[in-house]
Length: 102
Image: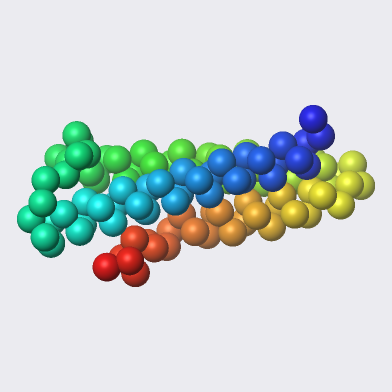
């Protein structure tokens, strides 16, 4: 598999993790507001969960960025798509989308 295609696939996996994270944060916040029971086991470790998740997503985006750069250096155009998607993923880590769901 080419590195450019692998870069795009890794970025898509990163976007999936980001989606799942924001969905979980929305469910936790919504359950706090409505007073319902939460299915998340580690509610007390939520701060460390946020940090861990951000570190994992940043690592995924940097790996995808690296693979995109390696593809661009080999004169392949698909690497630019991987670089752009990795940059968007990296920026989206620091934006709390789950706050806009409420």
